[in-house]
Amino acid sequence: MRKPTNRSGGKDGFLFVGNELAIDLVNTCPVLEGEPVELLKDFSAVLRWFRAAELLGPGEKASLERQWGGTERAQKTTEAMRHLREKLRTEMLLWERGGAIRGSTIDDLNRLLADHPMRTRLATHGNAHFRELWFEAGKPEDLFAPLAHSAATLFTTVDQKRVRKCARCVLHFRDTSKKGTRRWCSMRLCGNRFKVRAYADRRRNRR
Image (cartoon, rainbow, N blue to C red; front, side, top):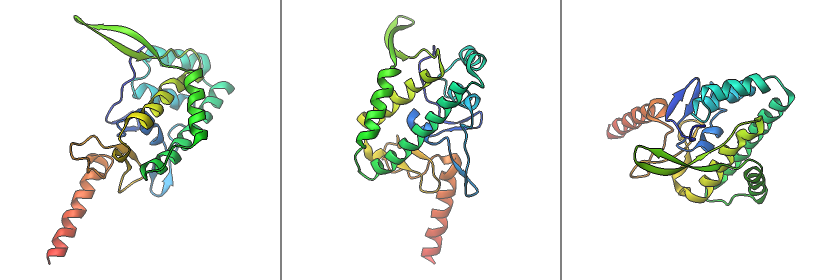
């Protein structure tokens, strides 16, 4: 099992601009032309997202698809994952404004952390040894392990002021810039438009 990692940009139709896995989960329902677009519409899409996020290898994805694809259990897991996503979205919007995480959400995350924990193992790279997190996806519900871990990590270790919603769209992100003044989800998606508009505003004001 690969160590959970996070990608920047997009892959296989999914956006990875949040700089945190839990934020990227929230971003799986973007708004295009004024309408929300569900990217996790079924279990197959969930597995594609996990593969794009490099949380599953190709063999693991194929095994889960073969064993659970189209089952009621997989569908329930997909629905539960979308429910968690919307709960995290609500919490994130409040949290970004300085609010506290609700007790019901903490209880839900603690239950997921207990039922589907991340594991730690000793890994080697050359002559260096290090600990890495991993999870074993033997059933659909195990996919909650990295999501719950990421959400708990986000709410306990990330600077609250560095997490925000894009000034131009519905996507959220953790600002990793040096100054911490970024206001758009990514340069490719909204940053260029933001800068063009700011430049036009400055020229108009000078006139």
